[in-house]
Image 1 (cartoon, rainbow, N blue to C red):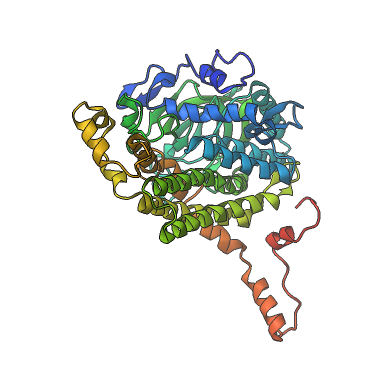
Image 2: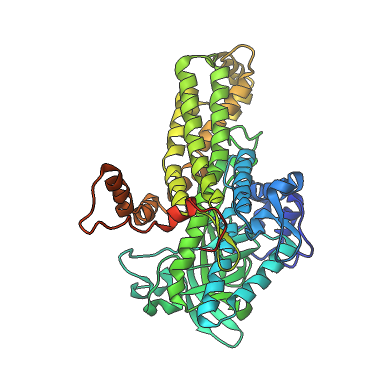
Length: 511
């Protein structure tokens, strides 16, 4: 752990300072970054994480909770859900942070990793007599006491998608154990698309696919400091990302303060001590962990409704600036944008409301509704973005630069011809257009659009899970019963699925 994390972090400023002077190996534009905290392309993503701390100070009930593990008041991103209400409050916090930052604030994956590991480690111990759950709880106590950022690293490069980990020509295409000793294990490989990894204090490594007995060396879950020896980060490019390096007042950036972050995380014999190992060869539990993580994480995508709120507000503002807020087709488009945004939130919040208690005591949200939430997210933000561009007009992509706007000769000409409503300053109109560009085409389109498509699993992954749980035979029996049709054996309706049991349940019994 970085030496400069000496006390419990409370505020966003304290969090930012905790990231300084770490020996991180970060490559960007082919060069090592001396201090990521001060790099203009990286800093907006750090600011977005800092807001998760400041929100917990400003709105304690929403963004923090009393931990049943430590008894402390902890950031909700570090809290193990102890009720369905905890799950609901996670979603409300996520929407609020989306509203506040207009981007990905990078902590949901760590929160969902902690909650999914709580039940998975418990059930591995139950079968194998291991002590993973005890180790995991000690880790949770530590990160709650120090109020640290946890990154969850699941996605591997995967190589040939038709082959499993042990079948790959290069075994490092899935993160694996390469050595063991009395102190712990050593892992090599890589984790791709790692959201907020450079901004994390600790990172939990997890499998990314179902594993077989021949894949035991790939069945590893463990926690490592983000600055552990052997980790190299290659920072990912984002559309329009260098605008943050152009100086000025950040008008061209659209959202100059906040941004997201992804990187390729390369692991070269990274050491994990046994006390930080939470799965070691129990390959049959990889699918359980993945399914529980994706159940949490897919309903976590209600965060995109916070971004949607911002984009709807930007589109409505542009309608006002252009003098057409009451035109019928404009109002209808804003209604459609709102309908789509709230439909995403409805599925996610319903999934959390239907949460149920697991054997370990943690609460897990309803899986079917989580799949529906995320599947909506793969579609609706694109339509919301299209409608925002429609309302805003072609200037979204043809605006001159901030330097032109400030130029002594060209600037006054632009002030004359970029005007909308006479009482609205041209600069305000330009700033709002740049925000729409930022969220639908630029840097934060990563978090709002492409991440909505592929984060927590691409669309087909949700369709597979929906198909597994849609229970057509049960529904066909319901129809036959009302139509007066009996099956050949006059059987009763088939057993209700776990989904229907949960949505009709009247208590919080363990399922």
